[in-house]
Length: 327
Image 1 (cartoon, rainbow, N blue to C red):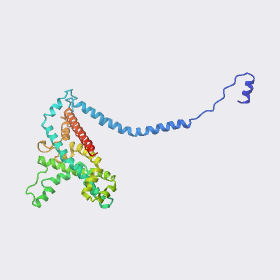
Image 2: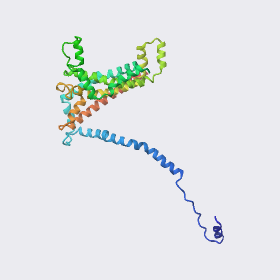
Image 3: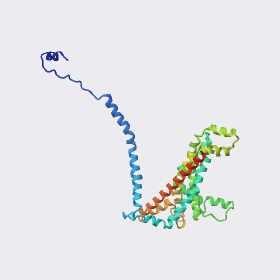
Image 4: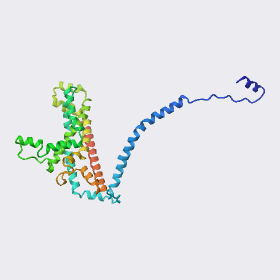
């Protein structure tokens, strides 16, 4: 208290309250603002991408589910028809053909997609320049566009293309092989192109898995007299087992939903009489254009979702059972 306040207090007068000094924003408030900004920053960066995912994935999926039970087209919203679309598609000849072709695609392509990239990755492991060249060469088809790949293989498989010309010059065949006009040859040619395109992609995934295998396991196997084949079967394959399961799932989904290879090799016609049509091509055929049957195409999409989901569940169950047996 000042001298004046002391004097007033002695005389019995009221003592004024002490004046507090003005306080500025303390360090605690600055820390609160700083921590709030730090916590919000990641969400602000993710927010635009989340909006795109919600609009073009979740809302689109819900709309597809809704349209599957209507008779809507591109020009009219349609009305609720229950399961009528599903009844019609199971009586549709094109649906049966597409289901057969897509299933055959999975059965023929997936085993090669799981095994061949692993063999390829095992052959090109190493840090030498020549191995780097081979890895780059094998990965090149992955970065090519579907149009470029279609032009390359359409020219190679043409009746007057390089493949038929070489076979004729070697007197192996006497007439051109109809790679692009026969139903089954178109389908198997598309499978070959799919395998050619996917080798490099899955090879890179396997290379990452191979780098995590302990080199001492190979040394121990070599000391026990195991050759390259036995080391591959008893060291490499068990070491990349989880990666093989991942590639099995990815290649199964990709094979059942194949579109680009068949579409490009057939110029969008799905082969003679649309006999090489796949499930994705059938969805595109029914769901696009001025006469698009969006309700029917949505029903086919739901069937594809159920089939792919069932295959993935079965693969997971089989993997768990085999894992228990090994344990």
